[in-house]
Amino acid sequence: MKEEGGYLATGDKAQCFGCEACVQACSRGAIGMLADEEGFRYPVVDRAKCVGCGQCRRACPASRPPKRNPPPLAAFGGYALDGTIRGESTSGGFFSVLADAWCSGGGLVFGAVADGLAVRHCGAEHPGGIGRFRKSKYLQSEMGGCYREVRAALAGGKRVLFSGTPCQIAGLKTFLGGTGKPDLLAVEVVCEGVPSPLYIHGFAEWLGHRLGGTVRSIDYRFKDGRRWDFQVMKATLEKPDGTVFGWKQDRWFNPFWSIWLQHLISRPSCYQCPFATPERLADITLGDLWGVHLYCPELYGRNGGASIAFCNTGKGLEVLKAAGHALHGHFLPMEPALRYQGPMRRAIAGNPRREECMADLRTLPFGPFVRKWAEKPGPRLLFSKYVWGNRQKVWCWNRLRGKKKIAEERSGEAG
Ligand SMILES: Cc1cc2nc3c(=O)[nH]c(=O)nc-3n(C[C@H](O)[C@H](O)[C@H](O)COP(=O)(O)OP(=O)(O)OC[C@H]3O[C@@H](n4cnc5c(N)ncnc54)[C@H](O)[C@@H]3O)c2cc1C
Image (cartoon, rainbow, N blue to C red; front, side, top):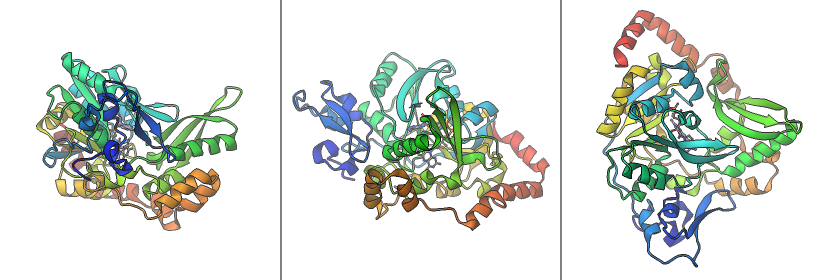
């Protein structure tokens, strides 16, 4: 990634993260976002309104990358003690608990909400409106006027928590001028890249046609209490007579995960993401606690999910400590914590068949597309997921270590 340039100067799509900082920086309202043939949104300048002031270029994190933090000070693994929060969250519910800690005296929280199949960023007063931010929506969110709202809230002396993908944190920071803001807590998700919206639209159309309804919403990682429930996709559909019904599919049979995680349908910039390094921009980075069964099995969330939080700044660490009473967990050794989080170390690998796959996504009907590109789970994988796998291994491990030792650890950990 070049230090100077950016999509508006070069037209190179790999240099546009879709963060929309340029749109909001333009005081003339001369920039809008338009989806290309792959469904990814890019800025388009209305030349009649543009006065060439260069504000858009200055706000672009590809042309002016903001200053990074040093590598994380600490990594903390575990889950929220409140079962309702955990049930409504993607992994261990850290986001909600951290928002409570930062905004305990009031504040504004920004995050991504589902709007039908689309995803939008918005702000909400804490604590009332933050429930809608829970759950990962695996599409890039539309930023609306959020960066401007953050700036106005900070200028008005409010505490703000802004959450988003690493490139959205970069967009916000560049938009705000790159300097630290004491009243702003930036919380990012570890990000494996964002998939093309064309996939989800094709899937929704296909499913609706098959089941005789219209897909109204998708929960990408529904927790339905079953023992392999960690990654069930749930769609809510509506029949023409108004009846609402649900559809679910386990992660291992769901082509979305297979196709996306082969990196066949990600945004071009994700393959060169400059933010996928241990030196982060946000105060806190949140992810799933991958590898939990291998290096910290006592934190296995009984399939309710477990999170990892990387504290990248002193402020992030203080907030985590303030949230400790609402968490079960402990600090983790940094080496395995980073090892199991690929996107904390490097951008996703390019797939040489991406262009072919994207062309098929545009032209093939959804069924044949999925048959061609999704990998079917093999018997070994299914055995390990449904018969003898991580959950059972962790259960045995915990039995071996003894419940007493675990109870002792738990009482000393979360404080
Ligand atoms: C596109 C995407 C890719 C991800 N890839 C990985 C990965 O490779 N490895 C990993 O460990 N974790 C990944 N995550 C993060 C993970 O899914 C959880 O969000 C994280 O573990 C926090 O869970 P939680 O239970 O604490 O939070 P939750 O309560 O589930 O909170 C979700 C948080 O994510 C934000 N969010 C949700 N959807 C979006 C979106 N579309 N854009 C921006 N922000 C959003 C919300 O604003 C909120 O802050 C990804 C998330 C997204 C959105």
